[in-house]
Image (cartoon, rainbow, N blue to C red; front, top):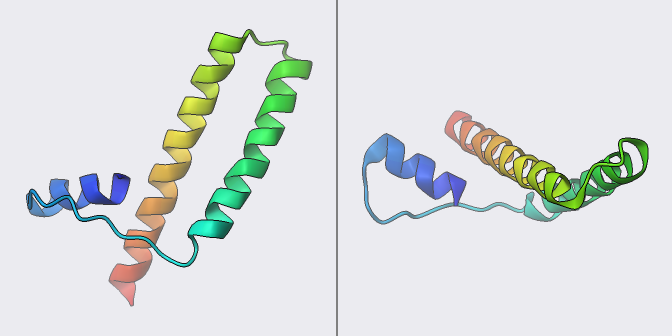
Length: 79
């Protein structure tokens, strides 16, 4: 979704065609491991309430998706 939105922002094409890559599986695998660490820290170390933990997970997911999508776009532009 982020690559499609970025493509629209750059080219103004309304097709919203995103891209994917073979790196998708390791990217989501690492994100899952990071979520486990975030869970442990926010649940046991900080004792954060569930709604606030949900916001942390949401922010993590958006940041992770955007940063890996942008890395993918930059990588493919240099090839």
